[in-house]
Image 1 (tube, rainbow, N blue to C red):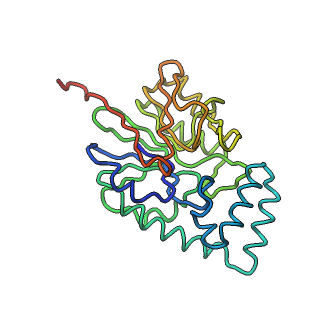
Image 2 (tube, rainbow, N blue to C red):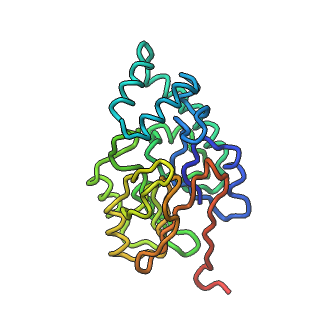
Amino acid sequence: MVSDVHGNATDLARAGEGADALICLGDLVLFLDYADHARGIFPDLFGVENAVRLVELRTARRFEEAREFARGLWAGLDRDAVILGAVRRQYREIFDAFPTPTYATYGNVDVPALWPEYAKAGTTVLDGERIELGGLVFGFVGGGLRSPMRTPFEISDEQYAAKVEALGEVDVLCSHIPPDVPELTYDTVARRFERGSRALLDAIHRTRPRYSLFGHVHQPLVRRMRIGATECVNVGHFAATGRPWALEWRSPGAR
């Protein structure tokens, strides 16, 4: 299991070694690295100094100032075309690194419309859908909820809840964002609560999956906790660690 790959194709190419499958919970694109301001689409275009300033404004939750600052830098450029070209270059490298089989869903910074161009045979993209692996049913919910960050794939609470509802009962609930629990949504470095999903939390209480697996929060207050019968796990900020999180189980009937 990996999440928040953010351009780390080198480690991704090794992440599935020894596993029966790789599951990716989204955020393949790296627009701006909050830990290393020299990495990402934004500093490549506008330099490290401007990246540092943008991070400062966002971290201080001065989102309107951050947007105004960025608008000034983009003046005279075709923002959509430039970003789309950079995203395509990152996707080409990331999707080439996926092993077979890979099961993936979108993160909030991803561009779902581009995925069919790069998902090769052996990579299955799932969103509001289920699969069976080794006797367990996995359900996938991609994307994020609307926030002041205005990232590319944010949807309404109602749209998100509909995708969760479509899954029904599953053994492993896979999503990019966490359920809406303060300990799981608070980022200790960014010093803010990220958006979690109430619909995911309600599904956990209602259907009692074995696991709820997610990413999105890079430095969570709590990486793992139980909600009733469900083990909730942030599988990690793969861009920084380069390490996958392993889920192991014995198939029904195995000896």
